[in-house]
Amino acid sequence: SRVTGRSPFAPMVQFTYRDLVISLPSGVNATVTDEGVLEIRGLSRAAPIRMKPCDDERVISSSCTPSERPLPASGTLHKRARTTAPLGCGSVPLSSVDGGDMDESASCGEAVAPPVYPNGGCSDSDEECGGGEQAHDGCPSDDDEHPAAVTSQGLWNAAKAVLDEGAEKAEVPPPVPPPTASLHAFPFPPEAPLRRWEWRPVETIGPTPPARWAHCAAALGGKMLVYGGEALSAAGADGPPQLSDLHAFDAASGEWRRCQDAPHGRAWHTGTVVRGSLDGSSDIFLVFGGEAARSAGGAKGKAAAGGKPQSLSSMLSYDPEFEVWYEAVDRGHRPSARSGHAACLHEQNDASRLLVWGGFSHSSRRFLEPELHELVPTNDWAWRRPLTAGRPPAGCAYASATRLSGGRVLFFGGNDAECSFAQPHLLDLATMEWTSPAASGEVPRPRTGHAAVCLDGERVLVYGGWDYTADGEGFDFRDDAAILDTRSWSWSVPSIQGPPPACRVGHSLVSLPTAGDGRALFLFGGRTEGDRGLGDLFALSPLDH
Image (cartoon, rainbow, N blue to C red; front, side, top):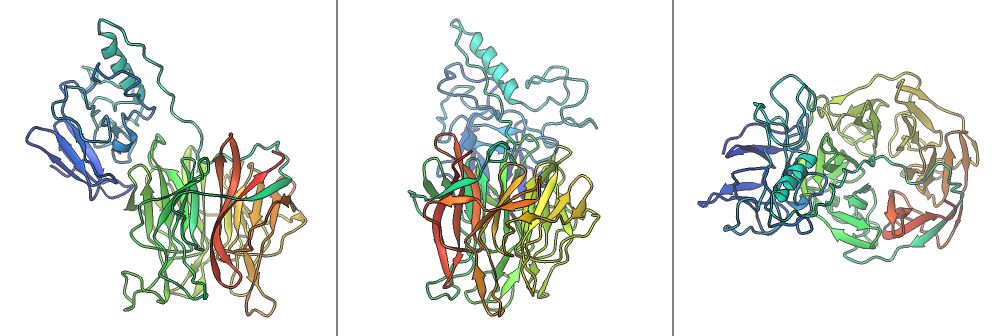
């Protein structure tokens, strides 16, 4: 094999096999048997992926009917047996027909390997991917020096042409269009009243995650991913080091599933779902920052129980398709080590951008300056420090950052060394200007370590958190919810029925689809009075949406 480059997204290794250039995550082994079969091992599966060369890479065996081998919109013949070219100007799938071993006696066409090029499917010209004078249907033409990347439509056209050549024409269903839903769709329509809600404890099946707080959670593929955090013993003392386990919850079935653990644990980090490729075919779970206990010797390495916390600047990305973690590779000036920071993903100029703000540094024992950091994960994976106008919020930690419609981000809550905050701050992404609107109505008490969710692009629901007690010797837990309408800048307290969850801080609140085309906000974990960690799960559903 020949190493030809690395991906800016994650540690990837490229090698050539016949006329293909294949990109795989580091740690995955690829070998060619004496029979010429390509075997890929090391993914999150017991059996290797096996591929056999074919004279015509466009051929799909006519013995495989569309009902037996449906072609997904992503252009792959089996999602679990796919890898992609490096992130450049495109992401090109490498396909396999099934997830198990392939019969070495299989005829030509039983496995399909579309051509993959080092630059992600683009020619060596200066034209952008998808541009230029030539139009490709997914199949290489005789006039092309560098054939275009095989697309899902092109694969379908090629497969249909082969099937149609037979004496008996197969009935071919139309290709499934690629999903167009944005990662940032809001859970409820703007016309919904959203004044009446109901708490409901959720009965689950499968291995339930242990109790924790200071974790992160995000929705990906209709499921809630929960990663990391810190466990608390019944006596209130810190338990084991920060957790490294990852769990997925499916609200439609009520099932928890244990996923691949991360390389190491952390708490008070952020987890955000971003596009893993320009075509949106590979969403990833991106984790940044946080804190972990130092090792007994004070050096970096495995954390030890009871060690002093150290802030982290490392960034991990989790690929749910392969169930594998990567140490994300980025460029530019990455934000300094921090925990308790706020992060938010927004879209600008058709590109997703990750904003990181605030936090606490254990090394300097101070709250960080209120400056913004921005990462463009779907382009060059470069960090930038955007310039802002107006007066930013005071430097603090454990605040929330929530994306609104109209290119705005709302920052709320958090604390510094003296107090917690209740003043909302708005960042206009078009002008990069800070404002601090004066809100009216039933203004909630100051808080930090709470959770916030944008309901419809305009209204934000805030729940839980805590604040310093009057004497400064303890914490006052919150168990209330409040909704801020950013159209009128007024607060209101929703009417909530049902058995309420315990007051908590350091919890997560994620919107998920439920059975029957509904949606609900799912509350998980946190820390409550008596220094007890929580592992319960509640659903907060609107009754008037």
